[in-house]
Image 1 (cartoon, rainbow, N blue to C red):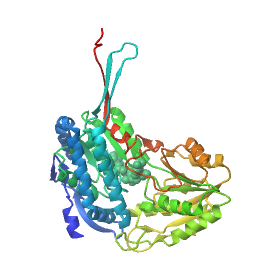
Image 2: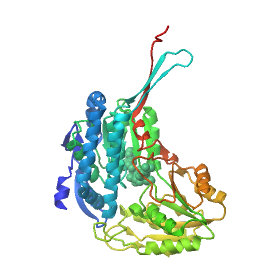
Image 3: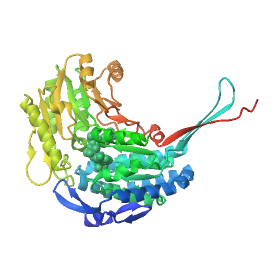
Length: 485
Ligand code: NAD
């Protein structure tokens, strides 16, 4: 472990060099399974952030002119290097974030796919050539890199959230300043080093993370050279950043919080539904924006579903994600355990019944038992708020319209899941549900080739797919002299 941690740069990445912060300050990174400090990093302040932006701006023109094929090949090499270093990336994620090692390996594959996908998209950034319908003169529409970007990532998917932003920005020809999350910066540090190893020129990607997020983001967003901010994180922080972005009229992509409904109809295949529920709820210890947050189950099958689901939850092994056989790791910090415990206590006080779990796990680290709650009142906090932990509240419905209304009764609109064997119902549900993503008889649907993103308070913009690169480009239209007049 020491050898691996020694490979992770602890400084700030500015213009291709790992440097110390001007603040003279550092911050610690903990292993949430033990509470032990595993690394100490340089903590960037405003001056460092501005140096990072200077570096990004200095190379923006050259980088935009670099042939797409060259940018593509850097991304392809990065994909290969991340894949070669899979064991190291997975171990780092488990160490700093807690997810079980097998899931961390899953994230390495998923995160690396964004590098491969955008290596392929970099050379297919098509424009248009048409003629003005009434006059016949040529009209050219082309895509240009939007310019220097600020990328802000959360702690829950330390690799994938970084590759999902860095890869399309590289593909489009943008330079960037990345601010990773204070709780899990190590993976992003090692990923940035991997991008340099893959041949990314100095200054294209700069990394400044630290104790104070706003000390880094505010001066950057006030600088007119910055052209875009892409943020993944909670809705309240996203709202603050949107307000700030308006001062400088910045392009924004916002991947915010979720409150995903998981609807089980009376005709669903129960084993499929339980398997889907385990993936949608328990992946990443429930700490995912796509995590099923409300189980909305037809009243005629609620008993069967709840019992089968609780049985699957009972066999989860809670513990340090590095240990063999562990399937549910710790939450990221003590505050996360306190929040989950408050939500469960509130539901129980309002009359919910605990089928399994419902308690903190005493001892070292930040653990909460995987939990299933039934008879949950619809106004309980656990139904209204994003849980971000291994807790599954179950409520019931009787008609299809009621299921849709219950599902839509949230300010969020990111992921939704529907389990039914009736394909026409699937189509009706896709019309009725106000969510950017829908899983039909499937609990895990994220993919680099799919457009990921939400509606309502879950944000705006899409990551991945062909749409992902568009977020980093602006359209330019050129009207050409009429060759016939
Ligand atoms: P968070 O909003 O607390 O932090 C996200 C990032 O923003 C971190 O890097 C943090 O340091 C930074 N930040 C915090 N305050 C800031 C400020 N005032 N100015 C600038 N930056 C600031 O979120 P989190 O706890 O790291 O992540 C969990 C949240 O992220 C959940 O709500 C989850 O749903 C959401 N999330 C969304 C997606 C998605 O794609 N929609 C993916 C993963 C996580």
